[in-house]
Image (cartoon, rainbow, N blue to C red; front, top):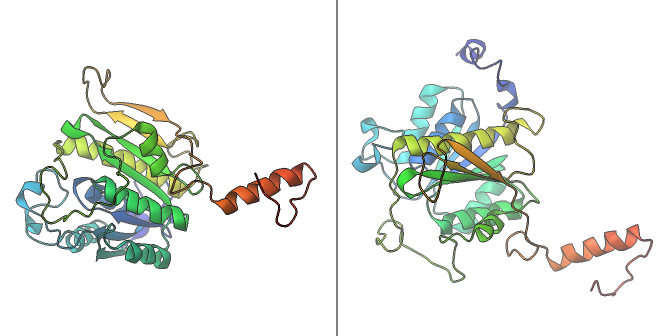
Length: 299
C-alpha cells in the first residue's frame, strides 16, 4: 500500500499523519456505529470495536446497516473489521464482545489499558450511554455520542471533553424521556420486550446523516481545537440536527442548532466531590491571601 497515493485526494483537507497515532473506541456497531467506524477507519485511525455478545447481522438490519448480505448471520465486530481493512489495509482494528452495562468493570479496564483519545458512543439505549459516560468521565476520556430521533426526523450529537459537562448533565438539561431512572435496570438485550426499548424507525439516509455529523465531531477533537477542520465554537457541546421539516418540531430541513450545556455541580457523574470543593476553596482563599488552616471547614 502506497500511503502517499492512498491519501492523495484528501491530504489538502486533513493531514493523515496527525491521525495515524490516534485511537477511538466505538461502542455499538448498529446502523450508526458501523458507519462511524468505517469513516474513521478509512482514515487510518486505530479502532477498538465493542458490541454486545451474540450480536449478528440479521436480514432486517441490512436495509440500514453498512454491512450487506455477505455478512448475514455473522458476528458484527469481525465482519466490520474485515470491511474496514478492505478500505484501508493499514488501519489497526481490534474488537471485543462486551455488554458495557452488565460488564462495567471490564469496560473500564479495557479503556484503562487501551487508553483511547475518544470514545464514540453509538448505542441505542440510555443505560449503555450512562454506563459509558461514567467510565469515560472517571478516566478523563473524551466522548462523542449521537442519537437518531424516531422516524428519522433528525437527531442529536454531543461531545464531552474531560472536565466539561458530561452526558448526565446534557440529558438532565434536556429532560429527556429516555433518561435513566435512579433504580438499576438490567434488561436482557437478547430478549427485549417491546415495552423495554421502543423500536426507532429511520431510513438509512436519516441515520447516515447523523453518523456523518458524529464522525465530524470526532475528527474535530482528534485534530485539535486549532485545526479549523469544522470551526465549531469550543463551548458548543450539543448539536440538534433536522433531517426534514416536522410541524411543531423542526421548521427547516437540513438545519443544525448548537448549544452549550453547562456542567452541573451536583451531577452524580461529573459534579464536584468533597475533595474538589475543598481544593477550590483553597485556591480562592490563597488568591485572597488567606490559607485554609488544617482541619478548617470549607463551608
